[in-house]
Length: 116
Length: 116
Image (cartoon, rainbow over all chains, first blue to last red; front, top):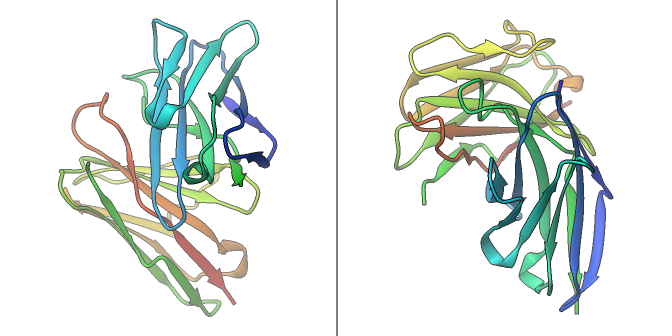
């Protein structure tokens, strides 16, 4: 069975500071990994995903994440936070394209606050 | 980008009544829709998967007679919570995908259900 753990339900950073949101997963098969963002009153939007190939994945809005198999991690980072990055972030895992690619297992989410 | 509209955004109902939540894909054909539920401080949990014109597939532990899912068209899926009880109070989110398994998921903005 797959599972996702997001460390820290709330993270607060200063504008311009590094953003680091942690995600660890458990999967008995090679995982597909995702980060979604949810702004207030909106649906979840895909930030980035890892399927195969390069382990450092770049997404929208300057975010990137690195798949580290040895650490079973997929942490999300952004070098410089912007006020508009304040939102809820969800890490998710799936197992395969054909076997339920979109059957996602989500973490509990991390709320990111950015202060001036 | 593609949009999924979910209504209502919040609903309060009395115990024992039924509540219907709608999920519409506005500019694409949603051959598959997913319904998730999220309790406070917990992960989004997949409840069921529905393919247009077919019966929904429910996850283990989800009562299919309580959570009725209808996906009668390529643009509309509904979730009806029948005989709602306070323990059904939760945040419900739908997501939709087109025919290609590798296509992105598009999420609705969610429905907060409170059962008194």
